[in-house]
Length: 328
Image 1 (cartoon, rainbow, N blue to C red):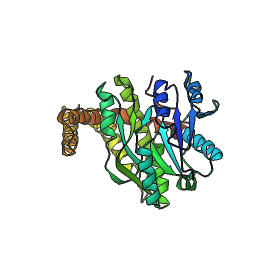
Image 2: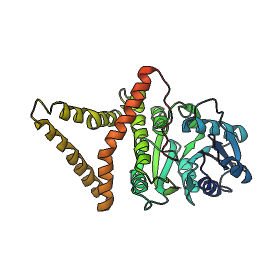
Image 3: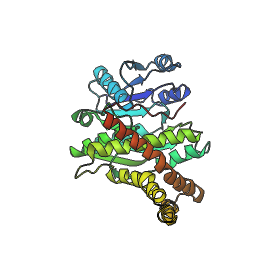
Image 4: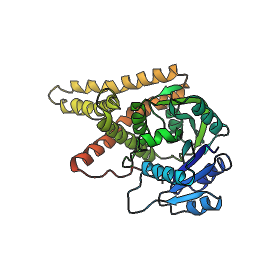
């Protein structure tokens, strides 16, 4: 019986999409590519490979969550017997052996809704920003609270919670996992290679926007699921607000009245960086990589608070959040 379908999403991914689709053709029962308004040849490329293509309606704002939901619905309309769906971003290539491993785990563990593995950056040495992506994705093995955009999901579980929240511009995968876990499902990260990702992130401005998007996601996640017992991303959101906004305001705002003694509060930043560095080294991350990771975490608080404040502003003005895109 057919079991696995695949949904790939993307916009203007070009050669990256070609690699993505070639890595799965003939290895799953059906593939759907969802295009979010590409102006390159992505749509024609996918169709030339025999892949079913869905072009999103331009009148509704694009989100990855919406694209995945549309792809899932189209996939099940074509092959309603599918048990599992592998989601993948169009800039990722599925590693050989992953699909069989993920299917076996879901077959043998009926309480598991989602399995994911190790996503790696294809060109980690191309820039420090690519390297930071690769470090970020090295999360603990075993039962997890969330997955990323590449994951295999049980169809029954996905349908039970109504899929992704289509209005989220970021953080839609952890938010889905919150609702899955509330229904008693488990999320599992395997000790297995899953995908190769091509970030093409070579400029500081790209990294800043990507980190802003993370801050937006943390704030929105806490807004939606910050209540007990989940407390989803509440701790992370308070950390962002403290380091990115409250501490510098306090240090600078009191500088005159304290004869600049309040500026000593800024020593907290190198202390924070050292703590992150030590934690990274304990995880056997190389010295130089641990250094840039710690530095990025400290500087990233300011980008994240910009994203978090952008989300809060949208809530106050009752406006829809717009995509924060880092790729050119």
